[in-house]
Image (tube, rainbow, N blue to C red):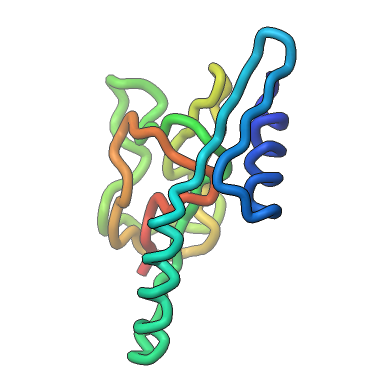
Length: 133
């Protein structure tokens, strides 16, 4: 199964408001689930934040499902750190999915205000990884 296939399955899940989807192709099988409670709580929080009119932050999100890494290998220094200035298209991390590495790129210029995931953590498509200020 190719990375494009996994991204397509995640897209189907999101576009059709599904909470779980499984797909089998020969010997390959993938199951993707979405945390419903998290989405519900997020909707409740969004309403109260709107009432308070809190300014929204910009986030760098995951381009795919996989395992997030802060550097290209365990001995290397991390691509970025909190307080570091990044420009659009700066590599800020890597996502590994099925032995394929995908760069995580900054989507705009800014400062890294917060790192929201840990090195080696499993992440989802579209998950917030960094908060920019």
